[in-house]
Amino acid sequence: MKRVLIEEGLDIKRELYLGLLVDRASGLPVFMASAAGGMEIEEVAKDNPEAILRETIQPVVGLQPYQARKIAFGLGLPGDVATHATPFFSSVVSRVY
Image 1 (cartoon, rainbow, N blue to C red):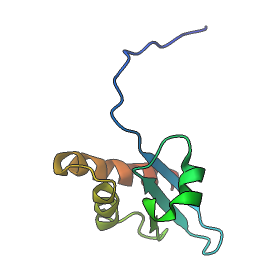
Image 2: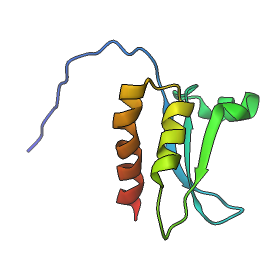
Image 3: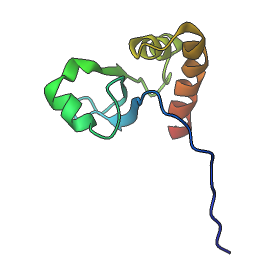
Image 4: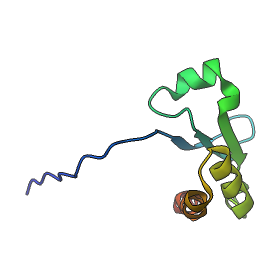
């Protein structure tokens, strides 16, 4: 059976970058985020590395709430959006474990 899902188009106001990767140097997972997101994160890393937020995750305890809040506010999310983003960030990380 073949299906096509069609969604309503939305006016995108801004793009963010979120990533979860393993840092080669430490061997630990790192949650990365940038308000200068989009598809060219490699260019951001090269030209403006301080625009990328990084939070190292200790596997035993996972992403801590204070780390998720730090990312949300570092992205410049307003308070009410940050409140909803924080558990979202934590749930993304918890699905990896």
